[in-house]
Figure 1 (cartoon, chains in turn green, blue):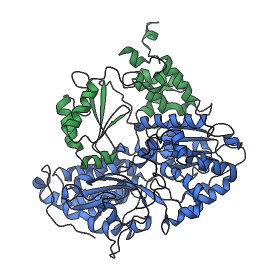
Figure 2: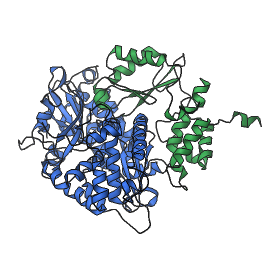
Figure 3: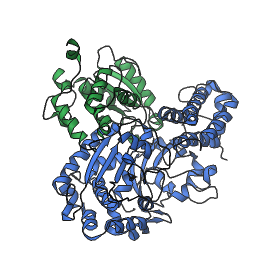
Figure 4: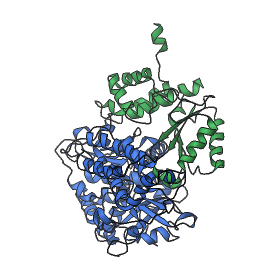
Length: 189
Length: 446
């Protein structure tokens, strides 16, 4: 019985959202909801998907856990290790590089103390992750934090403003489906 | 000043709302198609328009639609490819976030033409905030009777859903996209069967880029022949270009196909020239997959003609002296750009994004990245340069999907046009690897 107490559970708001999403696909194609449900899971459980959370995703979709593992490890948006409160995804591809993404990365490492690809900063606030093209090349260099794009980060002022905004966030911004009910992430924060 | 068929109202206050969008002529194509045209008549107009797939391949959209298999009693699908990930390309994000109803209108009219009763917009996962905008707009369209059962009393039913990806460039390839939509890894499928016969859930499916679908309303409203009057030859209509890199005014520009490249780069109406008063060195004109061209070859063809922004003119000279229009991701590089370093960045991208299914791509992209890495960091040998060309050749044509070519072409073209800069990295490694080092030599062209 102890082990079930540790098992992660989706909030009621998340469960309702998952059921809404599953209805978008044919009845026998519930697996189609894999990526949207993984996004919900990551938002619910602290910005990453542990093996236990992935098992839960398999359970709600009625599929085998391996079917979730092989997908979560293929797509780069899913964090498979614990992360800081904010994951800064820095675009490193050509067009951003032409407009200073390497300098931006060095600057973010210096200010936050975290290293790209490494664990979160000591204060637990920031994880730095380099990603490939975010499709906003005309506004380079760019950082994505959850659903927010921070663009034209080519001045120290712009970078400071982004970090200040993130430091001031007590809770991450609520998602549309959370407005009607309290999700795990917001309740636990 | 060219006509703006898609983006005319993009900066109108509140245009993301259905009532404002309707005030500016929105949803007229749905009324016209559903009330006065048969599905085949809509397909016919799209064929006449000469519209070519705006995602990069440039395949005629109407022709693609006409290939759709229509077996009795089997559902078929229209899937919008909104997995915009080609480096240098950012037009679809702009279209969807500012004009969500334009895409929805195109999806309704297009789905009607194809006889689809369920359609999906597959949007890259990073754009979840745009998915929220689209879902809000879709809810408005349902409430106004443009989606759901018996649309506008026509007897036609359509449900439209938005599906997020999870961060994988390969899902822009249409069969990888369908795998992903089915909840699997984005591994491209062997073809045949093509999606037109066996696509989503093994049912007949058409996959079209956002910008292609967004062009459908204007084609239906004005007629395919009118649309085809814009442009030059087989490059009809308008096209969105995503301008980025070292330009004074990077951004999204809708142009009539046929605009001279020189005007696009230097005119204040468009990119406003190269930043910091510098000279232009090179351009990647159609997204990172297409061959890079040095300044003189992007402005003029090898035979001295003005290079125009059309499918034909940009590819004039083949890969020896030309390039491709691709997705319209227009990346300009100034005279200080280190071409070898930039090529390495693109190779790192393709290595990272290879799905790993075909060994020439999985291993080859790794080799390209590794060899370029050692050149960039001053450890390269002269024979590494030919090794790059050899690896690129061995990837090309030997993979299930075009990611292999997309990885090979930029490397082959960079060596073709900037070989002396690669050699400089071997002969002067200390100089070439200094931060901000600028190649002092002259540019060579084939």
